Length: 140
Ligand code: 5GP
Ligand code: ZN
Image 1 (spheres, rainbow, N blue to C red):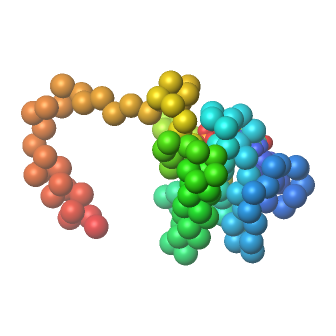
Image 2 (image 1 turned 90 degrees about the vertical axis):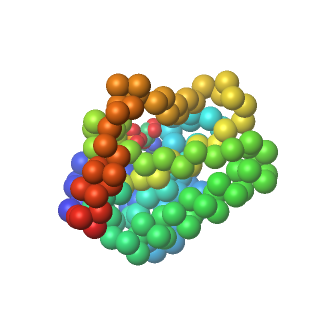
Image 3 (image 1 turned 45 degrees about the vertical axis):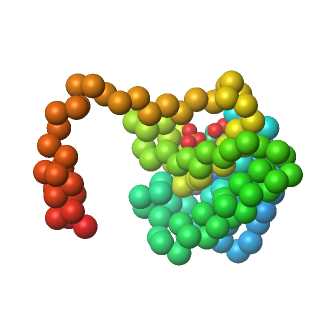
């Protein structure tokens, strides 16, 4: 459902300006207003879906193809050493704009200010992983 108050719907409809990198009938990519690193880009479907989990497959695919292309350019031409592709779903995961978007975050040096750390939780070392896998497998 599109919302009149959605900032990304307004960007997609050119109601508010942004630094657009790419646009076609379904997808638009623009620089994030708060650059985590130089070239930090957001790729979104023009149509409003709340997040990744709510977006139809064909649009997920189109968004990811554009994200891949921008990542390739940031590596080749901006000399990024790496790229993080990130999408947050719901507030608990850090989503602040409730319109599906993929962050393309170029990484230049290890201390470039962006951190995404996977730390093993020692309290979870005794989990029954086969049981958890089966629980998810049964629902797919
Ligand atoms: P989230 O936290 O939902 O994953 O990311 C939302 C991103 O949207 C943030 O990084 C934020 O800087 C960016 N953002 C929010 N409002 C605007 C805006 O009006 N223009 C642009 N270009 N980016 C925005
Ligand atoms: Zn929207």
